[in-house]
Amino acid sequence: MTDSTAYDYVKLVLEEEFLKVYLRFSNHGILHYELTNILEICAPLVKGLDEDDRFLRYEVIGTIADYLQEV
Image 1 (cartoon, helix red, strand yellow):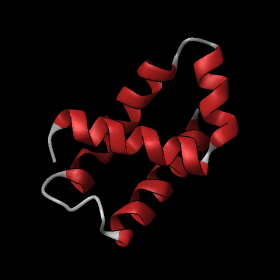
Image 2 (image 1 turned 60 degrees about the horizontal axis):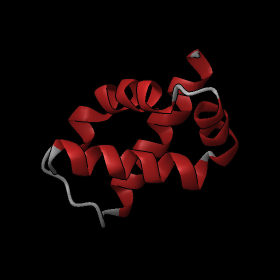
Image 3 (image 1 turned 90 degrees about the vertical axis):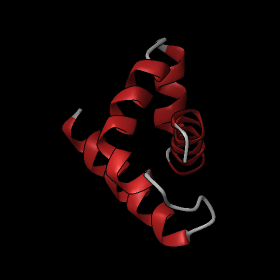
Image 4 (image 1 turned 30 degrees about the vertical axis):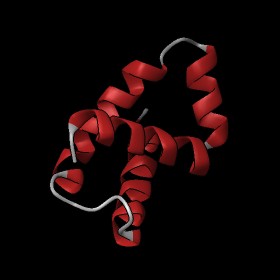
């Protein structure tokens, strides 16, 4: 998965699974910053994996949830 594809994938998961957080980040103008942080944490997960892999989605959701608890 390329970096831009991974970014778009993580953005989509954040928007679909954590809509209130996504909107809050967007409204405060920090969406790109937060997505970059989340993508850095998710980098080992998204490297070489298929976007259609549902287990990848579950891992990304869990990673985002963990990140949001720390923020």
